[in-house]
Length: 91
Image 1 (tube, rainbow, N blue to C red):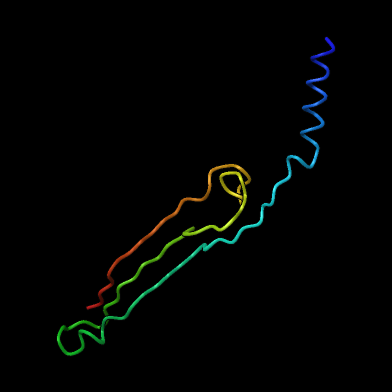
Image 2 (tube, helix red, strand yellow):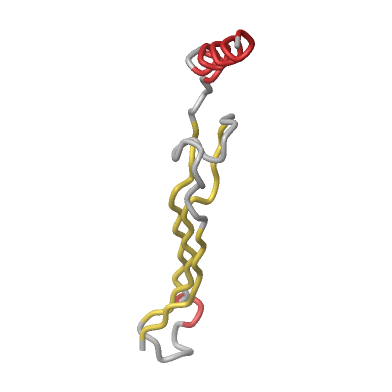
């Protein structure tokens, strides 16, 4: 019918127009690693070669005006955010 053709044509025109374009620019804090050497605190008190606390993170922050879920994956799920922390002791 004529109305089906009109709807189909309108959809095709909208799909290939600038209406579907979006700004995909982004800034992402992808990796962060912080550590602190505790040997200054424990020097001469504990028989350790080294002592360190640490935190590591991935995909911590993303700054964007992108309207989808993730600008890097173009609409699919964003990368997982992971955070690891711990204490490393060497005897």
